[in-house]
Each structure stands twice: as structure tokens, then as C-alpha cells.
Amino acid sequence: MSSNPEFLWYIPNDVKAGHRGDVAVDHHNSLETLTAQAKALENHGWKGALIGTGWGRPDTFTVAAALAARTTRFEPLIAVRPGYWRPANFASAAATLDHLSGGRVRVNVVSGLDDLAAYGDSEGNQADRYARTKEFMRLVRRLWTEENVTSTGNHFQVANSTVAPRLETRGDRRHPKLYFGGASQAAEKVAATEADVQLFWGEPLDGVRERIQRLKTLSQELDRDLPPLEFGLRITTLVRDTTEEAWADAEAKVAKMAEGQAGSWHDHRRAMAVGQQRLFDLHTRGEVLDDNLYTAPGKFGGGGAGTTWLVGSAADVARSLRKYGELGITHFVLSDTPYLSEIRRQGEQLLPLLRD
Image (cartoon, rainbow, N blue to C red; front, side, top):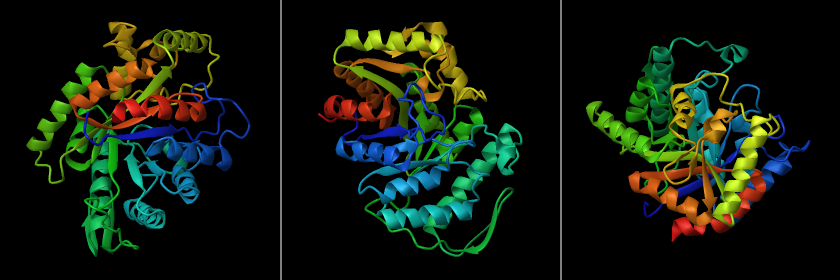
């Protein structure tokens, strides 16, 4: 494990109640409820949280700004999409929030399929989509670190553009980190040259090891001109007081999913990306991989980070996460439901073991 790993949680940001088995109440997405989660994260050792995005959800940046205003240390990892945002608009908005929050902004650039036509965007093929993402990330970084930027790309253009307020350098941090995900060849080329952090779904250790090595090699082959790429893991962690209790609860949850009674688990099933397909295919290798990577949720509706779960006592799950850390993972985005109670449980039981 890295000497300074970072641990974030997940805030679903969804108008539909019961996300991935969460408590289904009318005020589940109110400012008070989301603020309670953000403050619990501050109070239980978490750095911040990834905030979900997608058309049909509340606007992610607005939610992040509201939560930053109501907290003092919480760092929102704000999921954004090129096309929903133009680079200069986003660079300015993020710089403003970073200034107002004292340097707490993180950004997750998402290129997966969405209901693009609903907000006036168009799809194009995969090559065009990732070429646009590459251009977006490079231009946003330039707008954060340079002045009087002029760029004429295939997808975005700016002339003599200077973002205000200027970002303040904080230690070795010149700008918010750009997280990125994607497992296709086109996505990995973007990660290798433009991302600060590549996020992986909960694949087995051998798959993560292989992808880290491939991305390091690609970074060299493509002449990456940024600091070395960092790596992160986005996964569900089902932690209970004992191993037996954890597996009993995990199997009970999957049984409810199989009956269609476990709330909304389908937020990544609308469009099948390469990385998501890799996750769904894992159950063909077995219901439990490595020590405690549970693949059965993917058979019954799990999507994204809900497709595979690390299951066990705090000691079991910490042992598995340390093995990912030994591969080079330094950013961990964890979650389980009910979100609020699990923030507290895992903050008290799991995080101390990972920091020892």
C-alpha cells in the first residue's frame, strides 16, 4: 500500500429513491440528506466523494458546489462530460469553485454513452468520442495553467482565453486532478497521455495488474508529458463485523436483486462499454474470485461499481484492498448501502486498518 493512499466514498445523486438498495425515502436527494452524508464523510476519515452524473440526474456540478459550501474539508470528485460542458465554461466554473472552497475540487471526466441528444449533443463513433475527450482534457488543463490560450482543435476552439480566478498552486498541486475511466484501446490512449488518475472498476487483481502495466507502457510509447499516471479503484465494499455475517448479507442482497426487489441497480446497463462488459463477464470465471471478490451481483442487475463487491469483515476487505495497493492503486473510491450508515461503519472499522 502507498504511504499516502486516498479514500473517497460515493454520493449517487439520483432522483430515484433506493439507489443500489439505499434507504428509499422521499427526501433521499435533498440538500439536507446529501449534506449529512458529506459531513459524515468529513467526520469519519474520508477525503471526499465521487458524485454521480448522467442526463436525468440532478446537475452534478451544482450539487458539488452546494456540498462544498456546507462543509469545510469534503472534496467533491465531480463527474463531467465533454459535450455537456465546453472546455472554457468548465475550466472557469471549476476554477471558481476551487477558489471558493480552498482547493477542494477534483474532476472525473466521463466519456461513456449517455442520452446526449436530450441536451443537444451528438454521439459520433468511439474514435471521435475519445478524440474529443482528449482535446477537452488537454485544453482544460491549459486553461488552468496558462494565460491567453489560443487553440483551434477539431472539436473545440478558444482565442486569447484566460480563466479567472487563476488557480492557486497548493504544494505540488497546480490544478484539480483529472480522473478518467475506460477500458477500450481508445480510452487507454487518452488515459496514458491526459489523465492524472486512471480509475478501474472492481476487476480481479490479475486484470488490474495487466492494465496498470499496459498503461505505463503506453505512457512511454505516446511520450506522456505530464507527471506519472496514478491509479484508482472504484468498487463496492460490503463490510460486516464477521466474515460469516458479511457473506450472509451479501447473498441476501443478491437474492433480492434476483427477485427485482433491491432498488435501482441499472444505471450502467443502458449502454455497454468495454470495461462494463469485462465486469459482467467475470461471473463466468466463478462467483468468488481472488479471496473475496463477489461477482454474482453482475448476473442480476449490478452495474458499474455495483457489479462486483469485496465482501467480508473489515480485516478481510482491508487485506484485499492492500493487495490492490501493492499493485500501484493509490486512490480508492468505495461504497455500500445504506450510504450514510456505511460511511460511518467503514470509516470506523475499515479505514483505520488501511492506514496502519
